[in-house]
Each structure stands twice: as structure tokens, then as C-alpha cells.
Length: 221
Image (cartoon, rainbow, N blue to C red; front, side, top):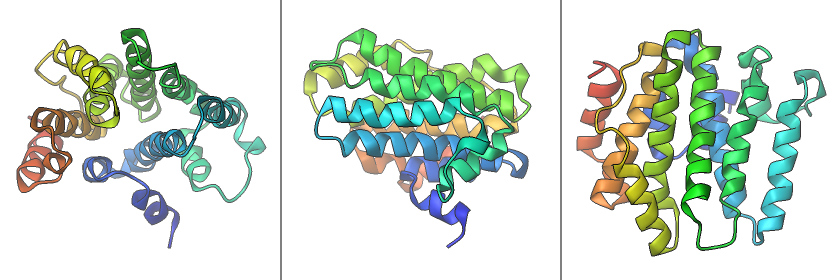
């Protein structure tokens, strides 16, 4: 199995569907971001204690702060991140955002907002690395929407989910328009919202979701 298929298989369904709409010139960079985010999510799920999660996140933070020559061999995410042409350190805030979720429960609004800003920063960094500098702020907004909508399905406590829902509905209803290189972010934000509104994981992979992804990703609507 090649690198692309290995990383694709690591993605949640929403991310896999969104990646379909990445143009060739931006596909590997987008895959790297989505795969890193998925790995950090898996790391959080697999850590029995917050301190263990923090130690594992610190490893990724330190790796992203190093030049590519200091990376270990054999890690598919690092191989994909080489497509970022040395701009990978801009993804450190994504790690910081995930670390915000290791705060003691119940998570407060500042922790959820910190997570959202981490994904927002990662999305803005993607815009820069694929040459979409004119859409950096739109990418940041989409990353924030993606994060807040996603929290509604990710959090286990009902009070935390309700807080995340409150924060999500405060975001603009209309998705920011972007060029083709960033349309996967529009798709992932739209499908995450669809899943939250339906309160059903399957809502992001239903036939209706595929139609919505087509509208957002191919037609740019």
C-alpha cells in the first residue's frame, strides 16, 4: 500500500470525502494536514490520562519545530509534510489546540475556543502553503467552523456538547468562498455542520451529504 492510501485510510469519512475535491497541486499538502489532525485525534482517544496525552502531543510539537532532516524515517505523515516545503512549523498551533482539550472536565469555553483556533491556524497555514494567500482569513474561518461543529460529535459530556453547539451556532451561517485549492475546507466544514444539525454521524456520509459535498467542493456554492 502506497503512502497516499495509507494516510487516506487513516482519515475519518468526512475528511476522505473532502479530500476528493483538492486539486492535484494541493492534494498532498491537504492530505498531510488532515492526516496529522486525525493522528492527534487518535492520540487523544488512546491516552488514558491527560498527562500521557500531553507527553505524546509534546513529541509531535517538537517534531514540527524541527527541520525535516531531523525527522525519523518511516512515518507517513512526515513524508507527506515534506510537501509543505519547510512551512510545517506553522502547524504547531494545531497541536496546541488539541492540548487545550486535555484540561480538566468539564471543558470550559476558553478550552473549546483554543481548540478551534488551533484548527483555524492549521487551515490558514494550508492556505499559505498551497499559494492561496488571498484566502488565508477565509481558511481560518472555515477551520474554526470545522472545529466547533466537530466538537458536537466528539465530546462525551452533554454539557460540553451543548457549550460547543452554542459556540458553533454563533459562527456565520454562510461558508466563506475560496479558490479551488481550499474547497476541501468548505466541504469539511459543511459536512461537519450537517452532522451536528442532524445529531447523527451518518449524516456526513449519506447520499445527501455527497450532494452537498459536490455543491461545495466542485461547484463552489
